[in-house]
Length: 323
Image 1 (cartoon, rainbow, N blue to C red):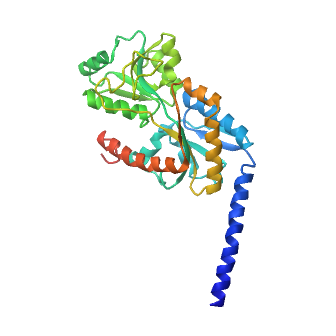
Image 2 (cartoon, rainbow, N blue to C red; image 1 turned 90 degrees about the horizontal axis):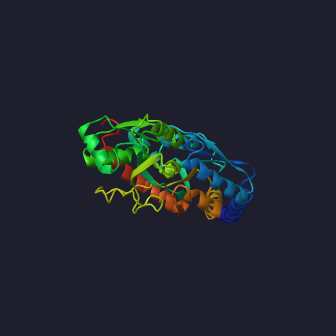
Image 3 (tube, helix red, strand yellow; image 1 turned 180 degrees about the vertical axis):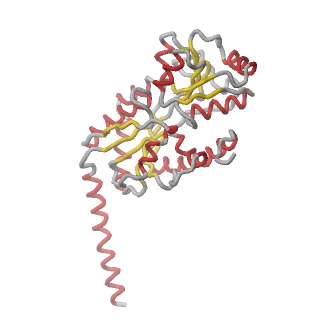
């Protein structure tokens, strides 16, 4: 009995010490540069906005936040890299929506929910389908009519297989009763070059295509938000065209499984503050993107819900393993 009381007393004394250690760790973190792995190539909308966020966070955290680009594999490479990284908060990754589809389409030895610590959500994309300005497709109706008359011959590109632009376009095609030929690219820069040079008949992408549209080189056939974009007021939404689809593909930042809660809180708060800086809001505005903050708790909940929702989409499109 006496021994048990001694152990309980020792444990009670240890708890404040452990809490103090955790607080000290959070207060001292970071003591060296942090790596933030981004899922798309340098120069595109994701890279430009994430670099703005990283610059702001560097000033708040007192250490550089260094962006490293790892494009390819539908945006899943940063999340995969977390699996071999130390759980100390010094390796972070952008988590595109495609990560939540991965387990349903590819054999992986890690779990997108259990094996990632979700720090915060930061924004999402504004998407649409564009064609060259000299294309015979003046409207979405022209696009659908051609596709119906020429099954499988209308080529379109996206920023990768199983990304939101790819899967959403396939869902639109399914609802429209048309068959398209998909060509994947590693990022927006390569995709835009392909559609501008005539290698593709159309592109599904975030609004990184805005400068080409404004320069009169591309035409927007539709956009994918709840309402029309101020920058492209003449382009109808998918809902207006009769498809009950809204896609803005929220994304945020994750860390390796087991990252200490105090470090998660420090990163969450620092990046939230970085999101509020005018420079970041302006960078998002260039691509019709909006800040979309979710705390670590809310982002974790969103991840779990999205994981279930994406399973239904993958199965509907017949893209699940074994289908």
